[in-house]
Amino acid sequence: MAAEPSLADVLAFVAQHEPDYLEELRRFVAIPSVSALSEHKGDMVACAEFVAAALGSAGLTAEVLPTAGHPVVYGEWTGAAGQPTALVYGHYDVQPVDPIDLWDSPPFEATLREGRLYGRGAADDKGQVLMHWAALAALLSVRGSLPVNVKVLVEGEEEIASRNLEVFLMANRERLAADLVVISDTDLFAPGLPAICYGLRGIAYFQIEVVGAAGDLHSGSYGGAVANPIEALAKILAGLKDDRGRILIPGFYDRVRPIGEREKAELARLPFDEEGFREETGAPALHGEAGYTTLERLWTRPTLDPNGIWGGFTGEGLKTVLPSRASAKVSCRLVPDQDPAEIGRLFEAHVQRLCPHGVTASVRIMDGGKPWVTSIDHPAIQAAARALAKGFGQEPVYTRAGGSIPIVAAFQALLGAPTVLMGIAPPDDHAHAPNERMDLANVYAGIRSAVHFWDELGRTNMASGGQ
Image (cartoon, rainbow, N blue to C red):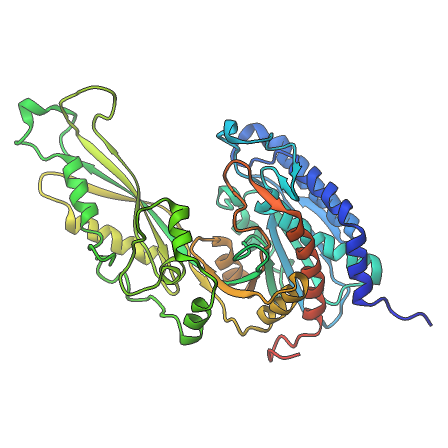
């Protein structure tokens, strides 16, 4: 009787097919699946069909499913009786390409230069989605089966806040039921250094509008007798934080979960170049909440930042006007266990307290997403750590992210499943910017890592955390 193909046989298959993965990624990136622009509606459908065909070729049952917006792609292989079920999530939509003149090569030509594939979506998230179906295809081609059950969900609206995905999840909760969710939409910590992200900040986004007189007034005729909304808005914004970076909204920090000593130790051992980080920003000095390191401020502490401010006359030349209104947009990054709805109420109440006499202020809540964190010791996280170490040849580090992926919290709430974030994008991938790129070495290491992950997960006791 012939011996069952080994994992080495699967990895040899992966190495042999690297040119095929490159060609498939080039065709994937070449589809201009810009979800925010209506003129690309047909491209969105074409890209969904491309993903479904790729999943089908990999050996999964796959289909394109409609939503109220762009379609989602769903595939599955559930032949591993008694084994855990993992749901792989990714997105096929991409950001707009503007400013087009800053691209060194056309954003949808998928141009290869010095081992990097340049094109919109190469890193965010097409290269990382391909990594998973390539690994599944390798396992199914060589072994004929997977060590665990796998479901794949690839959406087309992540770049426009996943407008219809939560409705889709609620309508398909039983079909999508899984023991864990796997997402590859994050970065390596440094070139060649894999990272497992175990925490994300949430977000609360507001617009403040301050209104004074019924219309703009001549500053000579009315200045000094009527309150100026720009001045009032400046006072409100100045009253939101002190000069040590501490947010002054009463109750804002009440639910902030402090990080433990192990997490502090993990952050401290990261090869973080603070001066290099400062140089990257172009700022004369780093600044933030006193008493915390830069990484702690970025990942484990909440923030409040004005993102835009406008009002009155801003054109060329002079106009002596007393404006009738002024506005600002303000965002808060939130950490466990803060709730965006509660933060919205606290924010609005504090703005009203700060509002000067002679004007009125209103707050419009524009967006909100919950923060998320999981235990480093979760068995699925540890399986991913072992897999990344084998795939990249280097032990991964544990990180949080300062940004938000709101759908992670939705998966937790709706499916009750923990999430593993094992991204492979280079730290300088230029996602959302001109000249977005993906290192092919990371793609191939990611495919190897995904092969190892499914193997590790098949031998992991999800209940106890041991193998």
